[in-house]
Amino acid sequence: MTNVEIKIRYQKNHRTDGVLRKIGAEFDKKVIQTDTYFHVDKGWLKIRETDSSLPQLIQYFREHAEGPRSSHYEIVHLKNAEKVKQTLATEHGIRGVVKKSREIWTWKNVCIHFDCVEKLGDFLEFEAVIQRGESASDGQKKVEWLMKKFGIQNKNLEYRSYGDLLDQEISCD
Image 1 (cartoon, one colour):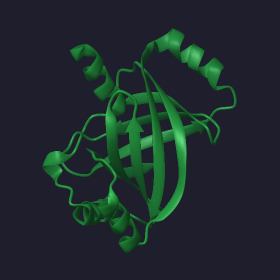
Image 2 (cartoon, rainbow, N blue to C red):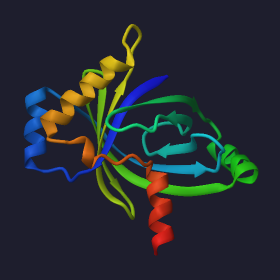
Image 3 (cartoon, rainbow, N blue to C red):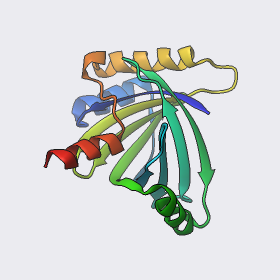
């Protein structure tokens, strides 16, 4: 699967609520997520556990580019996440654990995430999931349109994963 995404340090406010209403975004849900990252040679590998669905094993690869960028990912739903986590921890080692609350909104095929990440703070993500018959450039146009609506500039984007940010936070202490 492919998506186009951006991330920025961002605190939700009254203006944000107005933009969400104006563009017709719909509130989906609020969830608590724990992502356990594992050491891998390429890309990222994590198990995502939430309070509202089956745990998922997620492997993804992302471009290193300015502005909205594509990610390619695979998701496997896990019935026995603890056993898989133990196996991956033994084989690869745990890189880190990211805990966050996530408020999820949708606009067309774009997920709008307001994340409060433990030890890191507040973030906003746009994730355009590329649908059948759609190109990555279609997703990029939607994300860029949302960036304009929210007043976001490329120079303020965060290009690291939460796992990478947490690694840096820990190494600076």
